Length: 189
Image 1 (cartoon, rainbow, N blue to C red):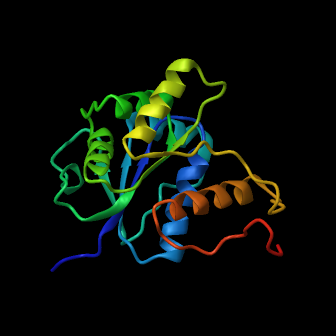
Image 2 (cartoon, rainbow, N blue to C red):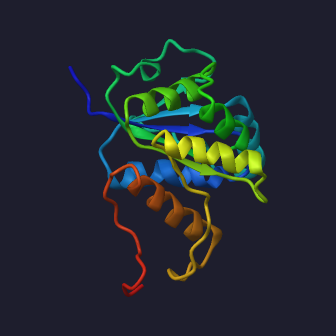
């Protein structure tokens, strides 16, 4: 039986694991899409440090794939997906995606997403940015990806870090072409 196309969520070891948690929550709460989740080894370590008691989402629609194998269906363009979101995205991962390096599942899935002309959104977590980072961002953008540094909004009057991360996650999910409910500029909040 065919399943709905999935959304691939990649999580790297950059600080900002709360973004990944909210991306998955937004997809679970506002869509019916299956989620293919890939965490780098560094992501697992940073998750434990930053997230405390918040566990990696365990849900029937979430499939956790080992980053160390390329035998997953999401490593192939024949696997139907809506697109891929990397949250947070380290600049190391950005650079490897920009050069077409695909030696892990997360990198291969990003490479496949670009070659199949599907949406790829990278929530790059780094500041300040060097010229090397900017050139990698340019290369990914020219290849069809969207670079979305998680810059917090204030027009929505966030009351907490969770509010800020949730808003960013919803915006990133929308960049995949998925309609979600969120606060918008110029609308009452």
